[in-house]
Length: 499
Image 1 (tube, rainbow, N blue to C red):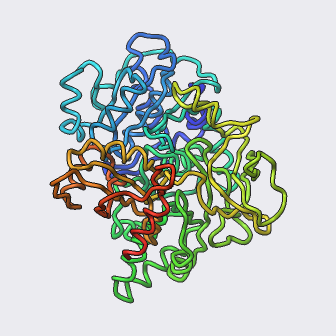
Image 2 (image 1 turned 30 degrees about the horizontal axis):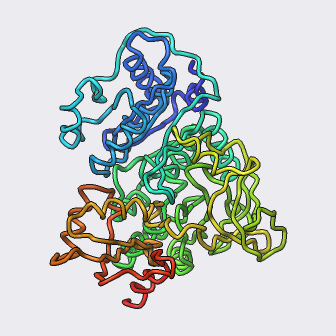
Image 3 (image 1 turned 45 degrees about the vertical axis):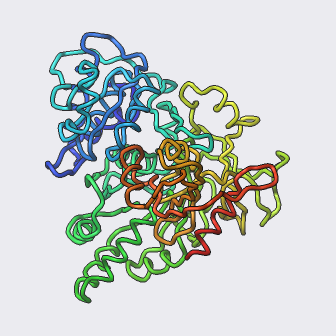
């Protein structure tokens, strides 16, 4: 049996239902068999992949998990690609990791065609990767690198966050203890699978516990309500934007259907919201609809989850709770001194086995992210009666939209390649549904006629949809301070005042 912790646990749940997707239902034994076949195909006669990076572009479902586990069991580093990213963003990840192989689902063959044509030996489909060869799988030490997830930072291009098998196990077990996961749980999975929230909090916690994970390829509010009513669900986790859309769907239903929806929610034991601030209005409306007091938590790609409102006890709207098991969280002031006073704001810094190993091939960025063993989150908070409350970020160039963290600098860098853009400034503007909306102020080149829709269409070919600006302001010049630096707060006011 593989030394990969989550895989090693699966044997004790062999007959349990593991995955439900559009193609059917699969047991843990099915997962073990399929992932071993993937591992055999990747090894192809080698004893160990020795931390080779293996990227995979697979929709949410059984094939995704088989690919992920197969990479781990062969000794590789799993690098999931986002299914909605345009080719340039995928190419960036493949180049940055120097991925040896790319496993892809046949449904993405047309999308990947230009890359496959350039290097056909590098790409292999889910259907063709599996081998029935009888192999001995390598031993996997917990200190080995296991996964690279890409996250936007304040310095432009996304950085690869490297987690070891030990980091992942720590992140999972902390949540299982805090949120009382058991093998009798059944969760509906609607989140992206290139992101910590969907990978760790939902998929890995379910499979570590021997629970069932029901996976949708993409979120659809009507389908989610249908599953709530008709499936034996016990948990649900989502971002605020999803709860807003579920509320809208509920409000559009007739009273009889509304009652069915609400009754279905009450049979579940836990509902969680995270990845972005949950507006208090949404918190209260969801409680009135579902009877659930949403459990808010706080985490990052680099640390997994760090803070959580309690499973038992008061869940405070607008707060992200207290440190999870195995996590130490402290506030520090600008001078690097620990803050002990209540209601005095500071930067959250984290220690624990869940904290990532490094940024992939970025030693300087890694070193700058730690101080005296503490990981510097860049998130500002204060503590009120023992509960952390996030009040913002130390960098104005980080935008939280729809549960994603994006870099304003990265978007600006791409926009400046547009022939009609002379200068630009990207900001996040508060929004009840999205958390923040991506907005851009542009100084156009002389004679250019820039409009929002064509600009958005141009952007969609070059960046993920959630990074594409939804509002545009054309200006004669950008607001700047006496040193000539663009003043982002003044740019934000342009959109706030415009309504």
